[in-house]
Amino acid sequence: MASVFYDYFGREAQNEQIKVRRIEPSDCFRVLAQGFADVVEMPTYPAFVGLFYGVAGAALVSLTSFGNALHLAFPLVAGFTLIGPFVAVGLYEMSRQREQGFPATWRNTFAVFRSPALPSILALGCLLFVIFAAWIEAAQLLYVQAYGPNPPGAVIPFLREVVTTERGRMLMALGALIGLFFAALALCISVVSFPLMLDREVPLVSAVAASLRISRDNPVTIALWGAIVAVLLIVGQLLLFIGLAVVVPTLGHATWHLYRRAFEMELAADLHMRCSVGAGPR
Image (cartoon, rainbow, N blue to C red):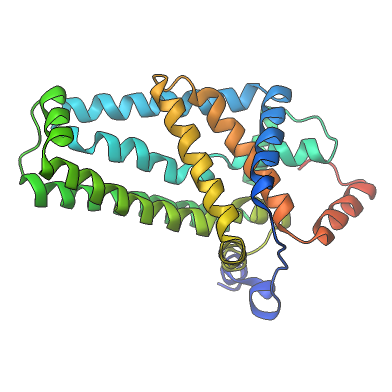
């Protein structure tokens, strides 16, 4: 019980706050470029994650088409990105290894399973899945309120109804607002939480609190980062999900670099000290 308490709370959550620093909107584009550079240098596993997203997204659309849940196709595809920060944990580890100067391969992703922070990482991942499930339930309730319990019968007539009628446009507007709420919630609690727990072995509550403080202290930058993520994911999906093979890994690696910019430089100094004493890849 004491071990579990430390995994989720720990001394840092009780006695001190993790120091964060201001990040500028321009940093979003800098970390994006760094993320793409990581993809170029380490293409094997990032490509696998991107393809996973592509296949999973296409499968979600297919399943909803045949499962009388066509009206949930877009919420499922859009909401699936809410759990992206959890799926990308392996990418953070690869960027961490590359930053330390160690060779980074897809095998480094399995180091996550040896991390002392694994219980906290899994707990936050479960929370993101809960947010995802809540988003899907909210989308279902919104559809039922607008169209009743019967699902749409075909794609084209349903899309025409949504685009050309007042009821359909109201469905889109309210759906966008509700989706924005869930996306903002997931972004604020996880924007740097996973890299922080992985890199510093910080307990869950401390990591989430630090992520919330970064979002509070840098609202414009975090909002811009969320917009960049949304736009790139939409572009990747419009290309029949194939574009996600590049977009998703780039965003995953970029999130690591955003985390590195968000914290006081003492973290970087500590990292250098750990490397200098011979700390190798986990």
